[in-house]
Image (cartoon, rainbow, N blue to C red; front, side):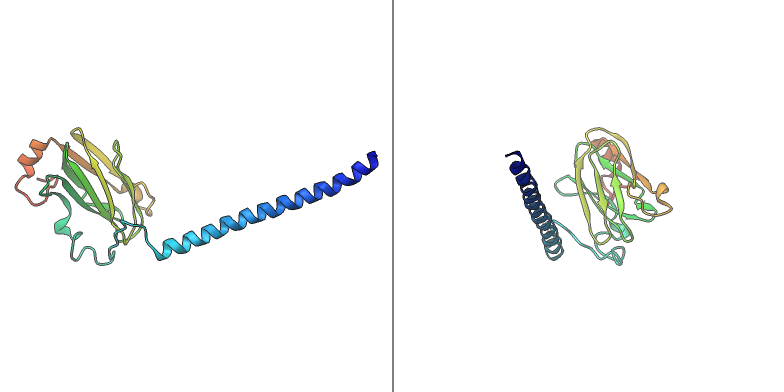
Length: 186
């Protein structure tokens, strides 16, 4: 009897190993099929709220030409900051915004991928050429924040930084109230 049981075990083991091999092969094939489908789908249909821009001409006209860069106050009293991240600088290099105000940062790049991070806040995104990155935030306190590029963009990367000055709302209106664009020089 013992010999008959030993003869069955190698067959049972080989059969169960074969079944597991087929199950694993089906799972791997399913994962690969999902990756291929997802890649083709997102190539054909871009995600919603993705805004594209012609990176080669963004500085010539439209929203990101030099005269439109910086902070502007909207009719609803919110602030919109338009910036360009380019090798090896943020333009403008200094941003001034009012405290206790909804602020929307709109940033794009004409050359390579850059990082957009405001230290001490929840602002953190990638800036990809050909796309507009939009981040919304609110600064509760006045002060200054450093804004380094946190995506390696080439040999001058370490010098790519800017800063954000947050002013009290009344101070902001006193200094920048009658200007179309607010800047640190004002």
